Length: 438
Image 1 (cartoon, rainbow, N blue to C red):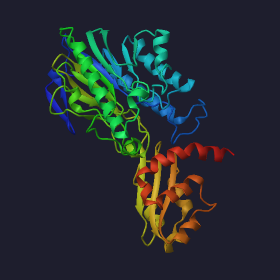
Image 2 (cartoon, helix red, strand yellow; image 1 turned 120 degrees about the vertical axis):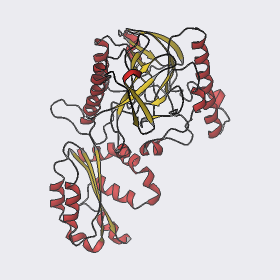
Image 3 (cartoon, one colour; image 1 turned 90 degrees about the vertical axis):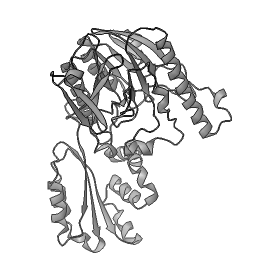
């Protein structure tokens, strides 16, 4: 993978990936794996795996992470930096902790130092409680360093030392006390948080510069940078009051690379300048809002003033396939089935939506449609969007519909909820599962 000696420049969208001489080993070059946002514990579109007793989505996320680690080890990395959000919840279950730890151990067993930065899903909401990744520090796990507060650390690698300026999520009410926030409006609180991020990053850069040496420096962060492109589901999830750190705060000559987490879409926010300010993206898809995004991680060659990176896409991530069909044809069933057969369903998660006039509803042979979908790993829903009046719509919300189908139909009937559909369905999943178990 990395890297045969040859000269080439490959463009990935706005990203420039250097191959050949620019990426070959030199005494000063340190190869680093940058990954983030694994979110072990997400169970949306999952089910219990009968062989392991583990939710299939946890197995999916682990498989993607292990593929990333295998590719990083094949590339002979010297260091791995994880930019936050190991788990979905701040209090992960033991199974999720075990599976994540087994992945990290594959790196440490190979002698690779790992730096784990605490993200917003890892940090407690109450001061004094441990973060979800704190256990690595408590147990003194070899080759693992945990960063849960703004600090500068020095990591020794087989290729030389690396300085890391760690900037984890600043939790409102923990890093910013009630006294500071008292009497502030939402926008004032947001600006206060943004100012705190900027001042902390500046402080870390000054502390690193005080060493006056040639050790390359990485800024690790887990926050939302102003101008970053969000996945569609994150755009609905992030609140208007969430702080957005100014890009200018990271444009410091002391930094040779900014390894960021929190945004699930891979991007370089400083493609025309230095240092690279990179979101590696998440290694797997959480919901349909990420279905068209390439998932993976980043490997970068770290060298003082000359750092270059490469985005490595992953192939094991299960696809989320959206099939949208206009079935207003003489034979609606054949039209729907043709659209289904045009996609590769095996092993993937599928959502089918078809639009049809009310007078043609009876001509859809639903059994044949479901048979055509049978090759999918999971069919999340089959949604009929019918041109109908309110009475006809109400007839569809009957006992012939599953609770999820009924909820989707209801949401579809409320235009003002369309931007929040995925999040509403996610919140409804535990209630639907409890209802089905009864």
